[in-house]
Every structure is written in structure tokens, then in C-alpha cells.
Image 1: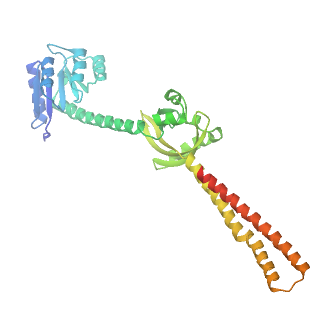
Image 2: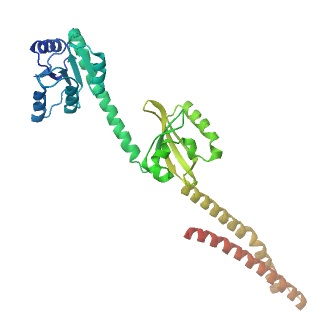
Length: 339
């Protein structure tokens, strides 16, 4: 059988010389060169960590030491060595206590009478890998909490079955006006206008069926004050405390949409002005030019001249009215721009 050639650093806390020799033999049977540090009591463990920083891959702990034992020993060892998996070795078969000890942070609980080189090695490797996985999960959770709670934009997590809010960041609390306690007692339906509620379940079901985990869409939301806002939503499926959920990032685009609508309104006015200039202005202008030409280049009677001057005056007034219309519409645009 090929031995494991990894460089394991192992702490064995065992006061019985015979048990220690057995543990050492089991370890060297499966591992080429394990670095084993042996102490016989709790006081020595405290001294070991007070003198220097140690990073053990695994700690094997006998539950009955001369100066400390049982539940008290477990609690203090876990506090003293929080980053290494601790495997309890005991001669007593107490299922209730073994379960209780694991709840205190112990990684595994092995009976000395049932030990062999394979079971000891398997427990060693399994708990080292398990500790690494837990550490990665803890780091991932810390990153999530930082990104989530420190985000300047509103974010929340909701359950895709019940639609209940599961977590909400400070930006969402500030922007929507609900307290954290209020949010956690609500569903996502409570922040939607009544006429939009029927669309929620349909939207969530559609998103469940889509392959992409990241989705983007605009919805209408309702603040605690009753104000309805337009929100650009980014949605991602996650597993939150064992529940199928979605994390939401909400970007309030109400002002942007209002600005766009205002621009569109102003563009419409500009189009009307352009149409006025290209169509309405031409009729009285052409008429004026024709009347002036008649008076200038034709011999006409005084009576005809007076009649033509009347037409000129009428066209001039019509032209003036059109200019005022253009000025008024231009003033509307300028006034909006100043605001």
C-alpha cells in the first residue's frame, strides 16, 4: 500500500504512553513522515500556544487528562485552537456526549477500542478537508455579507416559494422607508402596486425555468410612503440558509425615466416648431412676397392698392401670430431646461 507523502503537522494530547505509541504507529503506517508533537496535559497545550503560533493540520485529543477533562476540556481546547480540526479519542462509548461535544466544535469522536490505522487516517484526511471547506464557506459568507450590506444600492434576498424577505441591506431600508423588522415580516408583494401583484408569481415562475441565473428587468415598486417608483432589477438565484432564494439588486430609475420623458416631450415641441417653421410660416410669407410684387411691378388703382395693403396687413398679423407661437414653445423648453 502506498503511503501518503503530504507533510502533516499533528498535535496529540494524550497522557497514556501506551495509547500514544499506538496512535503514532497508526499514523506512520499510513503517512510517510508526519510531524507529530506530543503533550500529556492541558497545561502543556496552553504553554505550547503561548510560546509560539502553531498551525496544526489536526489535533487528536484524549478526553481524560490529568488536569482537565470532559466538557470543560473540549470547550477550552476549541477556544485555544479554533482553526484546526479537533478529533476526540476516548475509551468511553457515550453517544449523547459525543453528539454534544460535536456541537461545541469538535470535528470527530473516535473510540480507542475501535481504532486502527485506516480509521484514524480516514478521520484525519476527512476532517482536514472538511475544515478547509467550512473555512471557504465562511470566507464566502463574509464576502457576501460585505458586498450585500455595504452596497450603496438597495439589495435583498427573498424565498422563491413563500416570497418572504429573508435579508435586507441598509440601503433598501433607507430607500424604501421600512425598518428591518418590517421587511422581514413582509413578502415582495408588499412593495408592489396592487395592480402589479398578479404579475409577481408569473415572473418568478418564468425566471425559475430560464437557464440564466442572472436576470435584468424593470418593475414598479411602492415605498412605505406610498410613492411608486420604477426600478431596474438584477436578480440571481442562490441557496440561502438551505432555501431556494433570489438575491436582488434594485436601482431606482424613476428620475432617469422622468428625465427621458421630459426630453421626449421637449423633442416633440421642437418637432412642432420645425413643422411650424417649414409649413405654417411659408403660407403667409409667400402671400406677402406675392402682394409686395403686385404693388411694386403692376399699375394698379388706388382702390386696388388699398385692398392689397389690407391683405398685406392681414398676412403680417398672421405671420406675427406664428412667430409668437414659436416663441412660446421655445420658452417652454428653456423654462424646463432651467429647472
